[in-house]
Structures are given as structure tokens and as C-alpha cells.
Image 1 (tube, each protein chain N blue to C red):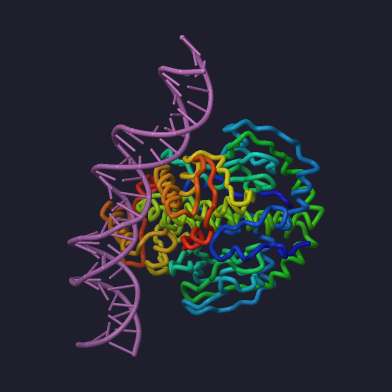
Image 2: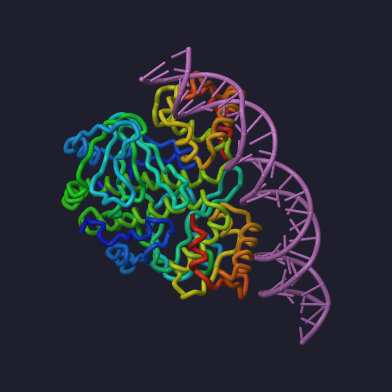
Length: 228
Length: 228
DNA sequence: CGACCATTTGATATGGATCAAGCGATGTGG
DNA sequence: CCACATCGCTTGATCCATATCAAATGGTCG
């Protein structure tokens, strides 16, 4: 199977509305990691891998959340992605990781040797196809994030909430496991702006904030209308 | 061959310093397009493909330049990439194109049916590997662009010039084939800001502007020092 | 030569960063 | 169990980078 049949569209428009990993044609690779992967536990804020380290493994989140990030020479940090259960990450084609990865919360992660997967892929076209497909999904996500970074602050925050709601799928209630600083570094804004935008959305009763780490989406159409 | 051996690093740091397509392990796929591709000519500003159209072909630039872009609902345009001779583009895994592609200048482009490549890839692991690799390079480029969008205006412009100089490889002289608006939409800035930054770089004698479409890099270290 | 389009330059406006308190939870030692 | 320290979040005041608006200039093509 070397077609991209299962891949989304419907997302293309604007929001990242990413399709859950299981629906993305990733089953082969995902299952391989499931079967052959070693389960490792990571404490909150511990490192999964570091930028510039050899990229010898692929990863799949079982529980918890992971952030991929990079610190620039001038000390600014950019969070490129959050990975939630069922997401596969670390799929880069380069020999070294470009980003670092850390557990946002305590997390369980399946780890499989990259060489195991690539040698399977060399034998099995379906595996190779899925590897390609998953990388394509990551590309798609990255391109969406790129678009997001040209939007206004309210748009970025609204996009973020909708993205998280779609991916975590806990029905209206979005638990923000990460601190404000992570959100800020993901959206390219300051923590103060994140805070202000959330307050503004609450005033507009688009969302409710029972606690600062729990967001309830009260009015998605209002949020969607903010997307450029 | 299903290893990413040839893939860069050295870029990872900051600049996109992208390795020319031929050195990226893309030879198989690139050569396939070379052998099996139909050569098509596109006039300046004509469309190669449109967003949301079926992604039935892969492309390789022979001459000229191509821009990939997307217009958001609110009418803003984002240029996600410029493709120069030897670059392969249109590699998305999704069934429909997310971006549109247009010729920046008159261009010659090799076009090959995607199904041709994918059925080759289903037989030939090397082809599958190269497909993966090239998509990985596109991902890498996209991630670099993402980082770029969090930098200051002078940094973005300096990065852009260095990127173009590396990719066009015409030794110090960078012909900007695209109008300022394209640069602006690529860097997420206004045309006025692009203009001002170029002027500023000229005053700092980091560059010279014999005409507004030709940039001479006079002092790369100064440009590099601007990168965050 | 004149019209048109792209680029530069100048003046002003503004969104978001930064600086600086305040506030609220969470946890620790008395 | 409560006082207090700490950390993360919110709120307010100010500043600055870049957008936007508005001409002026230059380059290209009929």
C-alpha cells in the first residue's frame, strides 16, 4: 500500500484539525512500535532526546504529553509541537535530531530502534509507505503551524484551543497540561499575551476557565470565526 | 538504501543552508523524474497547480523559479517556499494540494505522474526511501521557516538573503527573481519593511543593491551575526 | 515621451512585548 | 492546622517594532 488514501483533507482549509494518528494510514508503523517498542517512563520535564543527538529511535506516546522544542542561539525557546497519546514522533530523516523533546507531564513512551523500522521498510512496501505518510503528516502539521505564526494573537490562541480540543478529544473540556510559557513559545507570543487573550475569550464567553489549567470551550463558532 | 546517510546537519543550527537537491540522497527519485518526466513550460505568474486540486503529479524545476503559496480566508497570502532548478516539489502525502504553485519567472518544469512514482516505490525500496528522504527535507525546510517567523525583521531578511545565496549559488550575487511582495509574504513582513531592511543592510555595507532585483553580498559575517 | 507598475521613503498608528505589581494556588515547616 | 514562602498566572502601564497610510521616485514598456 503506497497510496495516501487515508490522509485527511478537510483540514487543508485553515485550522490544524489534525486527524488522530490511527486514522492517518499509520497503522502499520504504529503497530510495529506497539509490538516491538520498549515502554519507558519519563518524569515531568525530563528529556526524551536532545537536539543534535543521533536520531536512533522512533517514539510513540502512550500516556502524558511531550513537547518538541529548540533553543536559539540568543536564548529564545521555540516549541514546535506537542505530542499526545497515539502520536508518533522523532520521525526525522536526518541523522541528528533538530529539536529536543521533553515530557510535559509524567509520560509513558514506546521506543523502537530506527534501524529496526528502516530495515522492515526496506523489505515491506507498506511499512515504507506508512513511514512516508507519517512524515508527510508531520510536514502538514509544520506547514499549518507556519501559517499560524502569521496570524494575530487572538487568532493564534483560538487556533491553539481548537487544535488541542480536537486532538485531546475530551469533549469540550481541554486540560492544558503545559504551563503558559510552553503555550507562549508554541504560539510565538509572550505569556502575558496568552493570559490576556484567554481572559478576553472568557469575557466573550467563548470559553470558561474553571482553573487556569482547564479550559471549557463554550462557543466554538465564535472561536472558529476568529481564525483568519 | 533506506538510511538518511546523506542528509545534512550543519544546517541544524540556524540558517536553512539547504543542501542542493542532488546531494540530499534524492538521486533515485530525481533521476526518475528526469527520465520519465514530461517537460512543460510555464509563463511568468502562471499556475502550476492550485490548492485543493488533486495532487496527481510530482514536479522538478529545470529552469526558472516557482513559489508555493496559500491565500487565507481573510485574503492574506503566505508564500511557503521558493523552488529553484533541481528542486523537487509537490511531494505532499495528501490527496489534494494544500498550497498553490505558480511560476515566479518563465520556467521549465518536469512533471511525472505520482502514481508512476508510488508504484515504483512499492517495488523498489530505494525509491521508497528517497521519497521519504525528500519529504523529510521538505519537513526540515518547513521547520526552519517556522523558526524564521519568530525572528525580528532584520534577522528574517538576513536569513532570506543567505538562504537564497546558498541555493542559487551564483557566488555573491543574488538575483531576486521575485517581486518584493513575494519576499514579504515569504517572511511575514510588509513590502515596506523589506525595503527598509535592505536599505539598512546596504548602509551597513553588508550588501550592495546595483538594481533593486540584484543583491550583492558584501559581508556575510555581518549578515550571519544578525541571525538569532 | 508618457503611462504604469514596482520600489523606496516618510509620517503616523498600533499590536504585542516588556516592565512591574498584585493575586492565587500549592506545598512546607513550625 | 495554619503561617508563610514559592511559583505560576493575571492585570496594569509603558514602550517599541513593524504595519499602515501616503507620497515621491525610479524603471520598463508601449
